[in-house]
Length: 548
Image (cartoon, rainbow, N blue to C red; front, side, top):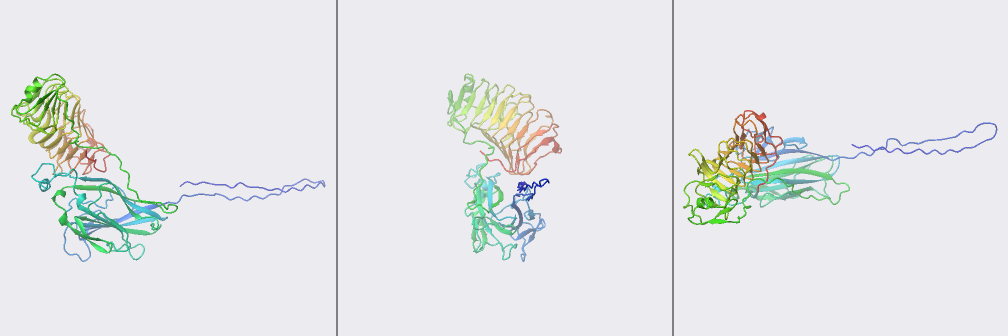
């Protein structure tokens, strides 16, 4: 606290009478001092506690127990661990009101949250921010929602769980001060609802506003209920009832995440207070920019039954050979080899099919915009969709899609330098390796890619930079990145990536410290290694990066 001392100056009034009778004069005086004048700032301090309910259970003592007279154990498993109940405290990283990893249609939960405002009356708001609504992988039923299964596509651009959750928030005070209410939004209680789905953009819910502040030194209670589906009943004077039939397969495996901030502000001298939604903080985007493909300017265009190999072999240096959507692949039945310096092989529109691999065998070659296929690139052991040989410095593999195959979507030749190469804005799904970089001394940048359901997303990695990618898998504990144990120098830097659904980084015994800071792990510290000290993962991101 700041202390300001104001000392009042003393005034002395002297009245002097001089008598000339042979003596001396004297001064009469008096001093009055007001000492140690102080201004001390008041304070507002918010403490929060929580009691969590889920279906017919309540979280007590760190485990789920049946509520009251309930006798039928449903879900959660009675006696299993829970962490949504805590005593009065300042909120920290371990205080999550909601942390559920197996939500099913019809699930109903409620937290009774108490707010303790110390010293002074205050207005209060509940803010939702850093909202994430993602697919988080795909199950077969989810994949088939929009018709025949299209791997990695349920027909919507983002997750669908938010649209299938309803929330109710209300003031839930009991009859006496300091006592909670009945977990029901009574007719005389102020509240709000999110009928039609949970918020997907930042929002602020007013809890105490001008005319009705939280009293200092007293406790006030909130009810915060959620439904996986739709509240068919719920609101002032009505006990909440959750209908799960409206929540379909499209929400399977999806993830909804948000930060909940409870904030208070002084009521005194603050008549115009309002709860405003938190400003959006711009964060790094990750993953493939599927819509960012720009049609090339073509020097030569391959169509119908024409041969790509013939076109690239006869092309001039630094020229562009395009392939249009009529190309039927009949003109090429073995791997296409590009030996022309600076050549670009590009699809006229994104997604032209290739039925054979492409081998990059000169510097500054670009291959962009194709749906590739893994096949024999060189020897039978070298299976890839795009193969960079020893001469492929400055290569670019971008805006391609590769789905399935025994081998790697992108493979570098053993001993290749591949300096300055870029692998960006691709989607690699269901391969043994999304990218495999054999030992080399050059630098490869791997950025803005999606790695989905590969056995290993990226393998090798000596000297590579891996950033702004998203790794996900329908099976937790799969391997996003595997670093060759012999790569003990020039080891990769791995920053600003999403590692979702528990995918991990494995160092296979590499002794160098791996820079893996500023990544988001859906399972904190998701490392598959016997030596965690090999990794520098601090700081971790606390919320998932938004996807392009």
